[in-house]
Length: 152
Image (cartoon, rainbow, N blue to C red; front, top):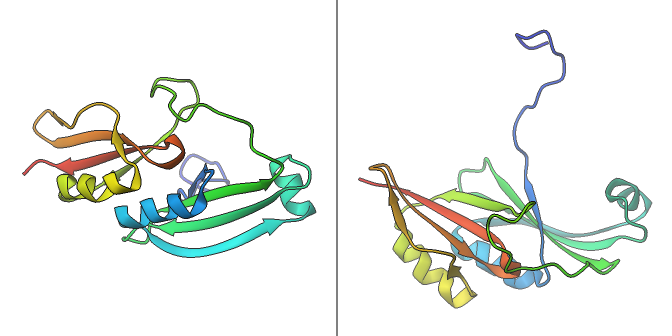
């Protein structure tokens, strides 16, 4: 039990999963950002179908790990059933829209390296108070990635 008398507690955030159309492009984008490819697999079968509530699931997964080893990003490409169309350019305030934020060093260098991978700023790079430079950018499949760089 934890200090509140509850027995079940969260131990950590294990990963965040994002569905993409082009797994290779998404993997290359996040590798350029600094994540390390931990492994790739094809997942399918009745256990997977029951887990996700979709009949006949077959998907390819690339698990990316942050350099500190504490965070993971699971990139998933569904082969079957086909993914429904979404709006990859939905505004950041759309219900259900997600973003992933990374603490970074040298944001300008990272932005320069990600642009050839299709990254586009959503708004502008801003300084928030006297503590962080922040930006939102879109990556593959419209994924919104936020970058936070401490201000010296």
